[in-house]
Image 1 (tube, each protein chain N blue to C red):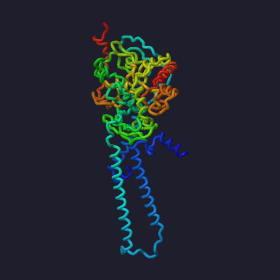
Image 2 (cartoon, helix red, strand yellow):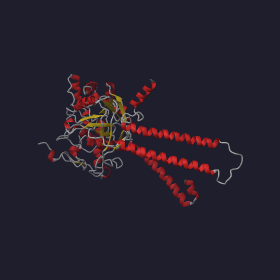
Image 3 (tube, chains in turn purple, green):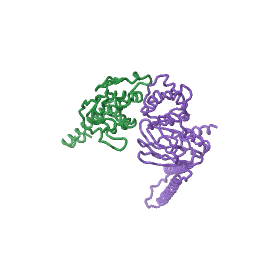
Image 4 (cartoon, one colour):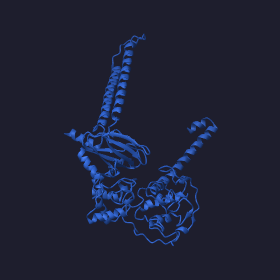
Length: 325
Length: 199
């Protein structure tokens, strides 16, 4: 079915016209109602114009006694009345949609802190026990059918959090905390994007929302809470030494090791993520190697500098990063 | 617009041509300012190895040796690079010892005294190779391009850069007078302070 194929592609691509949460469904209904009403009104106006332009006129000069004006006056009054009613209906509809998508999600909700950076997303799953915190980047996993509250922050400039299939957008403002919540209805991978111009690589500041069944999500979260695996084979071990001795360690953290900087994305479970560089590249060995050597060729202006590593060092480093599942 | 003024008499015509001259001047100024904002994302060629990866023994002499990277301060006139240097100064925790330039654990950077020289290449050397009594070597941990950015920023702290190149605002709360409005200090070669001499 071409239509199904198209809609699958569209859903993956990122669109608010294919809702996957009650929030976006409501907004979509409002949008559709507005579009249909506006289309009907537009057609009626054009029909009236055509009728006025094409109707046969009587030969005689119009008589200025106001008698002919009367039906016109009725029509104009009627149109004004209908317009006012339509606008009021939409006002009420709009306010009610706004209220429904901002209701209190309840105590069962999952809390996720998303911090915008130039040009990537830091994602932190918090817990009452700090040892249970899990930090990742650019890929947000959520359980299906459970409300998820997002705590939205920024460390540099204004960003805007927007996974269109799941949620309306909301700004992330430095020094201020915003929040929104949604509930994914069905499992799937949805794309999100920064929706506020934030500098050079605003366009390459994307993320994925992976909605999965609750037990699968809990398994994923448990793995993310784990510290990084200690590499077993000699190449990966050497790669770890390269990581700790080179410029990587100045910006990136790998939990369970001495790397603890929070300037760049946390790499503890890098190999478990689907994309690199905030949704810019699929996470493959080739892309990762190219990215480490020269990020500026792929994402000019990105804060990561080109790294000067020898061939064997690079090979070992990539082998180590690939063990970080 | 100018011709309109001219029709209305001499004084207005004068004003019109003055406006024209002013706008030309502004355009020239704006264009000359572009170099200051140039963003070179490829300061370094990709790949390859650092030519001199080993930490050399540093002679204990003021002014020091020749740095591995021989470009003489490539970012002295680039406001973008200096602001990047300022961000890195905090992110890489230079501020952990030198604070916001006033010094604490490490020597102050915003005064006129320089133990190892005030030239960009001296500062590069200090960061890359380290110095006795506590300054670690970052040569392998920070790529040369970023060391030059930090070196340029360090110079701006005592007003050694042009006013329009030095940073004019902070990323976070302001904790010191802006580098832009810092009086240019006359660098003094102070040598190693008594307190830091090896026993």
